[in-house]
Image (tube, rainbow, N blue to C red):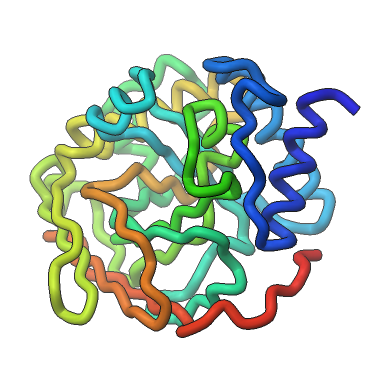
Length: 269
């Protein structure tokens, strides 16, 4: 078994057992080797697709300059979204599905056309986006204690967990994504605040980076894909039994809640 396969196996086993694994960097994957980390990510994605899951889009991470500096990197990363990660607006999430969940509010793009060219422009993006939605991403880490580097999080599918989309689609012409304010509330109290400008200056910039990156890789974004653009404010650790609502100016609101205990964790098929 190669180190790539061993790393992928540890992450899959952590996800299925509910027991986080040690950091991968410096053990199975070289420090700072993002290319190797994406190989590990793809090994897992291939396995999930073979099990019958469906790819529905992608998520962008590390869109905050402060977070990038803390990792010592100066570009975002990305992970794959699967149908099994989608949670209906307002639905309860069982904590048995997650290991170390945190929530963050984001803008979600839903594409109406493909983006096959890496020389994509802002005009191309605005034509390709069918609508935007408010979203909550439930990020998670299969690495113990969230002790992650850029290598660990990329290998771990960019620390993806679940995602919740709002039900109030808006056209890009109806909202200024750079200036849209965000508040994430728990029990009526703000726990995270931010704005579109916190996401690479504008969530559209994040989408542009992803479109170019994926086109260059030969696996471009397609019509119907959901793209989570990155956090508009700080992520918040999940409290068991808590409900969270994100409101983004011009986009509406989205909400989710969590079970009060982990319960029995079943193995994913």
